[in-house]
Length: 180
Image 1 (tube, rainbow, N blue to C red):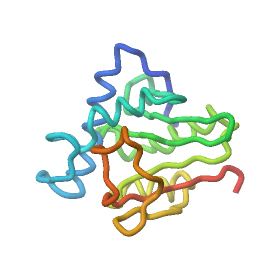
Image 2: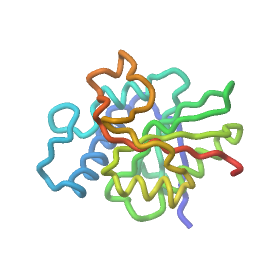
Image 3: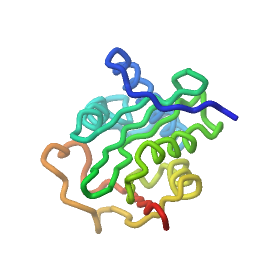
């Protein structure tokens, strides 16, 4: 059995966390679309520095490194609201070199163990991320509850998110109700 653990992100690891995250997302896009792809937020990146930093710096955000036997193999950013007993999985990534070892699923179980008080978790992923959809639904027990597209979209885009994503982006909203 692998020794998977979550440790709070240290300030001196912030830059590597961001670059590891960007590499994992870029790798996923390359698997899906090949080396040439126009689904980027800034230049060559599938997920921008701003998106990652905004998630890390958001109120109630918690950022962790995923360790496999003490080695950094990914990261997770969650947001928890202890008043509403709800949480959001902002970002979860495993470095491509560590894919296929059950690390993501073990990390998600560790997140749930960190916050047993949370009754409802939500996550969002682009429609084309088949690996993520499989992961959330088949491995972690989430359900797809909405498909956001140009004809239907969730909440209004907050001002600070404009330019980050648009109402035309096709995304799935996932929800997991604990105890169901």
